[in-house]
Image: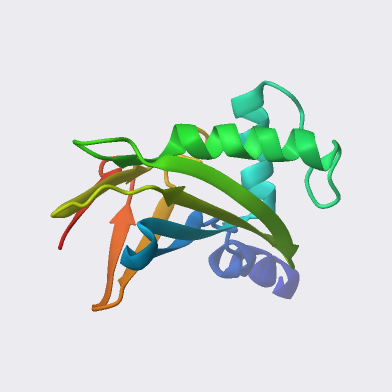
Length: 163
Protein backbone atom coordinates (compact mmCIF):
# COMPACT_ATOMS: atom_id res chain seq x y z
CA UNK A 1 0.00 0.00 0.00
CA UNK A 2 2.82 2.34 0.89
CA UNK A 3 4.45 1.59 -2.45
CA UNK A 4 1.27 2.57 -4.31
CA UNK A 5 1.11 5.83 -2.38
CA UNK A 6 4.64 6.79 -3.45
CA UNK A 7 3.97 5.63 -6.97
CA UNK A 8 1.02 8.03 -7.15
CA UNK A 9 3.20 10.92 -5.92
CA UNK A 10 5.80 10.57 -8.66
CA UNK A 11 3.79 12.43 -11.33
CA UNK A 12 3.20 15.30 -8.92
CA UNK A 13 6.88 15.90 -8.31
CA UNK A 14 8.31 15.00 -11.65
CA UNK A 15 8.67 17.72 -14.18
CA UNK A 16 9.48 17.59 -17.81
CA UNK A 17 12.47 19.58 -18.85
CA UNK A 18 11.58 22.80 -20.56
CA UNK A 19 14.08 23.97 -23.12
CA UNK A 20 14.69 27.68 -23.46
CA UNK A 21 15.86 29.07 -26.77
CA UNK A 22 17.76 32.32 -26.21
CA UNK A 23 20.60 34.16 -27.87
CA UNK A 24 22.25 37.39 -26.79
CA UNK A 25 23.88 39.98 -29.00
CA UNK A 26 26.03 42.93 -27.99
CA UNK A 27 25.96 45.45 -30.82
CA UNK A 28 28.61 48.15 -30.39
CA UNK A 29 28.15 51.34 -32.41
CA UNK A 30 31.53 52.90 -33.27
CA UNK A 31 30.70 56.28 -34.90
CA UNK A 32 34.36 57.26 -35.33
CA UNK A 33 34.83 54.13 -37.49
CA UNK A 34 31.36 54.17 -39.12
CA UNK A 35 31.01 50.61 -37.84
CA UNK A 36 28.81 48.24 -35.87
CA UNK A 37 30.62 45.42 -34.08
CA UNK A 38 28.55 42.40 -33.08
CA UNK A 39 29.17 39.68 -30.53
CA UNK A 40 26.46 36.99 -30.71
CA UNK A 41 26.19 34.19 -28.14
CA UNK A 42 24.15 31.11 -29.04
CA UNK A 43 23.89 27.63 -27.60
CA UNK A 44 26.07 25.39 -29.75
CA UNK A 45 23.59 22.51 -30.02
CA UNK A 46 20.75 24.82 -31.11
CA UNK A 47 22.96 26.71 -33.55
CA UNK A 48 24.20 23.42 -35.03
CA UNK A 49 20.60 22.38 -35.68
CA UNK A 50 19.70 25.71 -37.29
CA UNK A 51 22.90 25.90 -39.36
CA UNK A 52 22.36 22.33 -40.57
CA UNK A 53 18.86 23.16 -41.73
CA UNK A 54 20.05 26.38 -43.38
CA UNK A 55 22.75 24.58 -45.38
CA UNK A 56 20.75 21.37 -45.95
CA UNK A 57 23.86 19.58 -44.68
CA UNK A 58 24.41 17.76 -41.41
CA UNK A 59 26.93 20.01 -39.64
CA UNK A 60 28.72 19.28 -36.40
CA UNK A 61 30.32 22.06 -34.39
CA UNK A 62 32.72 21.83 -31.45
CA UNK A 63 34.60 19.92 -32.72
CA UNK A 64 34.06 21.17 -36.24
CA UNK A 65 33.23 18.56 -38.84
CA UNK A 66 34.42 20.66 -41.79
CA UNK A 67 37.39 22.94 -42.40
CA UNK A 68 37.51 26.42 -40.90
CA UNK A 69 36.97 27.92 -44.36
CA UNK A 70 33.81 25.88 -44.99
CA UNK A 71 32.34 26.53 -41.53
CA UNK A 72 33.16 30.24 -41.82
CA UNK A 73 31.40 30.46 -45.20
CA UNK A 74 28.31 28.70 -43.82
CA UNK A 75 28.13 30.90 -40.72
CA UNK A 76 28.72 34.06 -42.76
CA UNK A 77 25.89 33.19 -45.16
CA UNK A 78 23.62 32.29 -42.23
CA UNK A 79 24.44 35.58 -40.48
CA UNK A 80 23.65 37.62 -43.60
CA UNK A 81 20.31 35.85 -43.98
CA UNK A 82 19.12 36.18 -40.37
CA UNK A 83 20.69 39.41 -39.10
CA UNK A 84 20.46 42.43 -41.35
CA UNK A 85 20.93 46.17 -41.04
CA UNK A 86 18.41 48.29 -42.92
CA UNK A 87 19.70 51.54 -44.37
CA UNK A 88 17.71 53.92 -46.59
CA UNK A 89 20.98 55.18 -48.07
CA UNK A 90 23.81 52.79 -48.88
CA UNK A 91 23.92 49.25 -47.54
CA UNK A 92 26.70 48.70 -44.96
CA UNK A 93 29.39 46.14 -45.75
CA UNK A 94 29.07 42.91 -43.76
CA UNK A 95 32.20 41.17 -42.44
CA UNK A 96 32.16 37.88 -40.59
CA UNK A 97 35.16 37.95 -38.27
CA UNK A 98 35.06 34.50 -36.68
CA UNK A 99 33.79 32.32 -33.87
CA UNK A 100 34.89 30.49 -30.78
CA UNK A 101 33.44 27.97 -28.35
CA UNK A 102 33.06 28.50 -24.62
CA UNK A 103 31.47 25.64 -22.71
CA UNK A 104 28.08 25.02 -24.37
CA UNK A 105 28.05 28.29 -26.33
CA UNK A 106 29.26 29.44 -29.71
CA UNK A 107 30.33 33.07 -29.80
CA UNK A 108 30.15 34.73 -33.21
CA UNK A 109 31.96 37.94 -34.17
CA UNK A 110 30.92 40.16 -37.07
CA UNK A 111 30.78 43.78 -38.14
CA UNK A 112 28.92 46.09 -40.47
CA UNK A 113 31.32 48.61 -41.96
CA UNK A 114 30.94 51.80 -44.01
CA UNK A 115 27.79 52.84 -42.17
CA UNK A 116 26.29 55.98 -43.68
CA UNK A 117 25.44 58.93 -41.45
CA UNK A 118 21.98 58.25 -40.09
CA UNK A 119 19.37 59.54 -37.69
CA UNK A 120 18.07 56.05 -36.95
CA UNK A 121 19.34 52.51 -37.18
CA UNK A 122 17.02 49.65 -38.09
CA UNK A 123 17.79 45.94 -38.09
CA UNK A 124 16.20 42.54 -37.84
CA UNK A 125 17.34 39.48 -35.98
CA UNK A 126 15.66 36.16 -36.68
CA UNK A 127 18.53 33.89 -35.60
CA UNK A 128 17.30 30.30 -35.18
CA UNK A 129 13.60 31.22 -35.37
CA UNK A 130 13.27 29.04 -38.47
CA UNK A 131 13.91 25.98 -36.30
CA UNK A 132 12.77 27.13 -32.86
CA UNK A 133 9.55 29.19 -32.94
CA UNK A 134 9.97 30.05 -29.24
CA UNK A 135 13.44 31.49 -29.87
CA UNK A 136 14.15 34.81 -28.13
CA UNK A 137 17.03 37.00 -29.27
CA UNK A 138 18.14 39.75 -26.93
CA UNK A 139 20.11 42.57 -28.55
CA UNK A 140 21.88 45.17 -26.45
CA UNK A 141 22.73 48.21 -28.55
CA UNK A 142 25.71 50.05 -27.05
CA UNK A 143 26.65 53.58 -28.10
CA UNK A 144 29.09 56.09 -26.62
CA UNK A 145 26.04 57.70 -24.97
CA UNK A 146 24.56 54.59 -23.36
CA UNK A 147 22.87 51.31 -24.10
CA UNK A 148 19.41 49.95 -24.80
CA UNK A 149 18.14 46.37 -25.00
CA UNK A 150 15.68 44.89 -27.45
CA UNK A 151 13.84 41.57 -27.45
CA UNK A 152 13.34 39.85 -30.80
CA UNK A 153 10.70 37.13 -31.12
CA UNK A 154 9.05 35.46 -34.10
CA UNK A 155 6.35 38.15 -33.93
CA UNK A 156 8.81 41.01 -33.51
CA UNK A 157 12.02 40.52 -35.47
CA UNK A 158 12.59 44.21 -36.29
CA UNK A 159 14.02 46.90 -34.02
CA UNK A 160 14.91 50.56 -34.39
CA UNK A 161 17.18 52.96 -32.52
CA UNK A 162 16.83 56.74 -32.96
CA UNK A 163 20.03 58.73 -32.57
